[in-house]
Image (cartoon, rainbow, N blue to C red; front, side):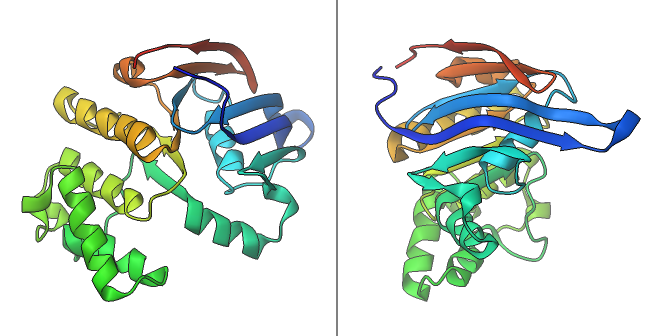
Length: 235
């Protein structure tokens, strides 16, 4: 595996502090980090170690107090909030433990609706929805609603919705923790496929050791600092 050839996220000296005085908590304490296209990086650590803060800062959801994030050649937090929103909408995909599907919509509609909101015409949106549902092996579930599917199937719909816009940066927060072994493995394989087939950068916060065999790189964080960085070659 060739590493370091396409850095798409470069963070330097990131700091994030919450609260004041005795209640002050340093969530990120001078983090430097580079993330590559085509790789899955896991971020692991105890609760309160800074995992969610780091994914929020790198994903354009929450500004750091200090430091910089260069994303695909642009200074992410040096832009206006409007430009950050547009960048995130176009280039970023998010997968959370809570899948956030609309109860009244079918799997097909869950994907078509946001694509049309982004400006895709109906024909293209429909075509994309069919393609990604097939990619996550849910073509036969296109007309099912969330209450008619399992938790694993709903998570795969959420991943299909994310993949439909072909994001270059994918951020995941505990995507498999609520799933059984079979569905957890299916979701992990889809994230690996997104990295290897779509050349996406996949950055995943997790406590789930079952994701380790699918990862290229494992970071461990404690007290707002990266304490270990191990790389694997599993291709």
